[in-house]
Image 1: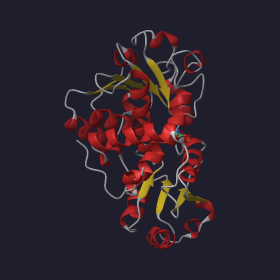
Image 2 (image 1 turned 30 degrees about the vertical axis):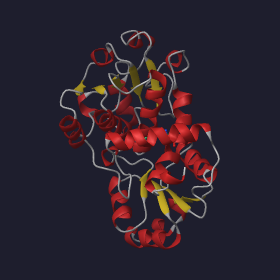
Image 3 (image 1 turned 135 degrees about the vertical axis):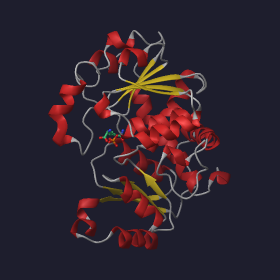
Image 4 (image 1 turned 180 degrees about the vertical axis):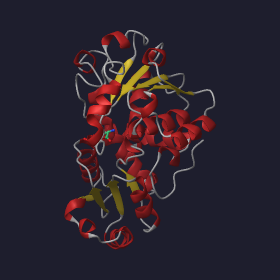
Length: 309
Ligand code: CP
Ligand code: NVA
């Protein structure tokens, strides 16, 4: 069932179904009332090893809207880039700020930051997971479809960080998920096993996108070449195209009122046809906006400030 949210949010598996429901209730409220003061006198560092538009903007704007102060740090301009240890860096965060939002190449970096400091650490994307994305995506699905119960989510493409978190999030929230990837680019095996333990009937991994999408209420895809995978770009495009592109034809196998989701940034003509991502079933802009509301709710929960809402 996922474990109860404690100090850090590194994985979707750090949440129970109840945590997800609670964060969504707070997010709905914050979506109506944008500005408040619950994070007054709190300073939160954003340590980013990779580029970002949405995650950086939504965390910085969200922290400011809650009365707190964000400090953005491009990791390449810190002493980490000159060999200072992660352990010492974690101790510095603990001395200067109240929490860290970190986007990293290696998931282990997050684990070290979290275990070596007493302040909350939030995964803003790693090679293994993108839990802030999926937590907000569950909110978007609930907003668009009315409930998370009985949803059939199809993920088509690369079994990457977004896919891993979506598998866990679906299993914990009680949605069914079918994932279609080439054998070579399957989702992380430990994550799939964990999700199947949580939801034995609800998680299916396959190769055929048409089987995955058939009858789906939500169709989700992400880039074929994630940050850090650039060296295998050519090989990946050969493997994924044309079979794993979300086209209008593939969408026609989903339910008529199915929604199309993508975490963005998107590559039109690669993982998705422009007619789909820019078409009437696409919810990608609302999906992006919800990052703001849901991450604000997550911050309040991690800082035990929910009672002050
Ligand atoms: N979806 C997402 O995390 O986007 P950014 O890389 O722009 O933050
Ligand atoms: N899978 C993508 C997600 C970007 C938000 C990446 O890691 O680059």
